[in-house]
Amino acid sequence: MYVALALFIIAIGSVVFHLLSPWWWTPIASNWSYIDHTITITFWITGLVFVAVVLFMAWCVWRYRHRPQQADVLYEPENKRLEWWLTVGTAIGVAAMLAPGLYVWRQFITVPPDADEVEIVAQQWQWSYRLPGPDGRLGATAIRHISDDNPLGLDPDDPRGADDIMVQGGELHLPIGRPVKAVLRSLDVLHDFYVPEFRAKMDLIPGMVTYFWLTPTRTGTFEVLCAEMCGVGHAFMRGFVVVAEESDYRAWLEQQQPARPTAQRTVPVMAER
Image (cartoon, rainbow, N blue to C red; front, side, top):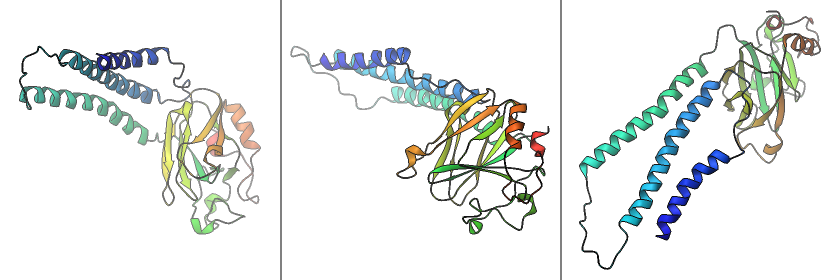
């Protein structure tokens, strides 16, 4: 009886805790509400199964408890009908969780053709950013070019990188309402760029270039977190993304310096749309 009661309290207590919990998502600030919907669907499916299974266990413990006066019970190690029901039910539940995720993933990796581009570079333990200059294109990079004077490894022979704007260890500013493709690189170990309000995140893997995209939908200053354990300074690897109106974004952009100071200083093409 005590075990059955404990299982019942766990099932009901979990539901009450969820309904009364003060911890929930931060208000969304991007177009990825689809991700919230997908997580909600997964939560309801797994939550209902959890409650049903725990309550069923509690009922079994109580219903089939040992009683001295009870006669011998029938031992049935297999039940094909029950196994079929469980197999079909499990398949439907898994499909219901996977289908929305696959739909959202397709959107997540399909970058709009008119998206602006920004490069995000991680290293222990800071974030750096690179935006295209007047030509609207980021220059090529290579690990072999990294030095104290060239911390992001810009290719000196690529003219497209001469006007690129570099923000090292500072804030990244983005205009509201315009799709942005974030190109991700790591200079040392595995990192993960995560802004909770954006609902979009991706690993930065040494030797690879990864990406994601989003459209900021709310102005404000949002904290950047590294969501992958990257060393002793992991907890301090933070930054900020500022989503601003177009005029404020252009004003910030005008104050930035190109990666190569000799480049002509004009407002980048991506800010003139």
